[in-house]
Image 1: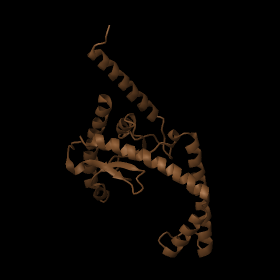
Image 2 (image 1 turned 180 degrees about the vertical axis):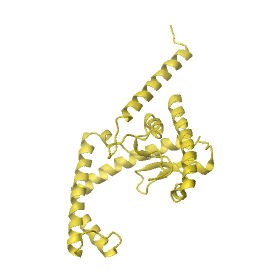
Image 3 (image 1 turned 45 degrees about the horizontal axis):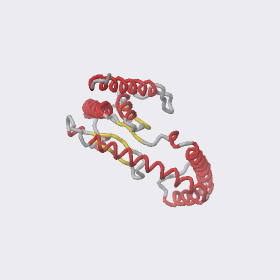
Image 4 (image 1 turned 120 degrees about the vertical axis):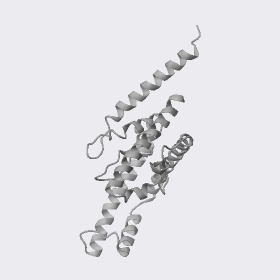
Length: 232
């Protein structure tokens, strides 16, 4: 007997809810460098992005005493999905960069006879950058370019998907609306308020209002992406 449309819809929705629950449980296991889990106030939007194949890399629910007074989320490539060959090359690039960075820092301190590098000193930074670049060989640049191209390709796909969902976004309050902030390298996407730069310098009392209103707006964005997942 052929399944009714209603039965098929219920089965599909049940499957989607199982995926949502599974992702939620997996995110519970994530810890940052300080051993802290994802902030509870930002977890649901992280789930909503993840189930839409938009992997999150960093997030914060917003704080009044430190950091930023509004919730934000970063989206970017998950390197474990690159495959063993490209991941091995990325490991080589990371290791070579760290080694070269240490060498460049040591040479700079020795040349200028300082214990700490002054990053505002133009001559010092020119020497630092020159020695750093000189330490990279052809293999480093080859691998770096391969990893970079894959990062860029994935990020461009994330932006396309984000734009397709965000185009239906109707802010609760335009003053606290969210938008995509894309880094100059185009491999990091941050979802943050359109007035993020202004909010950073707000007074304590203003930050209380900002945090409350942007949290409401983030919940609205969460529903947008959850609905997109459930309807897809």
